[in-house]
Amino acid sequence: MALDLLHVRPGLELPRRTVHVDWERLVAYAEASGDHNPIHQDEEFAHSVGLPDVIAHGMWTMGAAVVLVADWAGDPTAVVSYGTRFVNPVVVPATGGADVEVSGVVTKVDEETGRVTVELSVTCDGTKVLGRAVAVVQAPVPVP
Image (cartoon, rainbow, N blue to C red; front, side, top):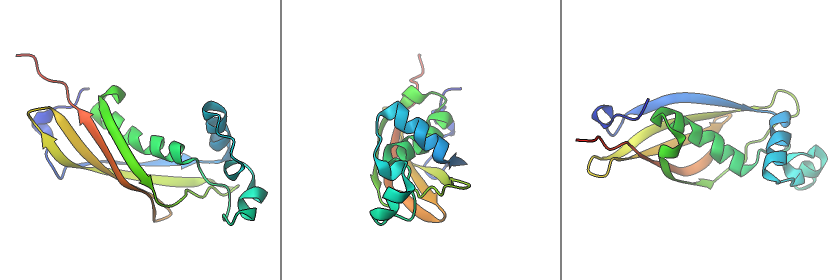
């Protein structure tokens, strides 16, 4: 279902989502992305550089968060821009993994261009992991 601008206003909250990440997912992401940095896969190495455990790839975290917006828009190609700052790592314990909490709120609706700006809040264990996470969605333009 495509995004309907008639029902979108600033302040609208998107449905919250929890994304689980565990070591198996980190290995799969490393294989897919080619990012085999040992801080994402080797507990001993992560400890040696001062981390409490392995951490999720920043790009995995960024991608997992924007799925909330893509699903809400009804089309992943509707997300025309997305940017963020990495402010804290997602620590992934060997047992149990970690949950990333994602929520979003519409901050701007440009009815002339059909663009909707969504600000995301992304946390893990109550700690903000992404800052200034903003996605812009292009709503379909109605045909007259």
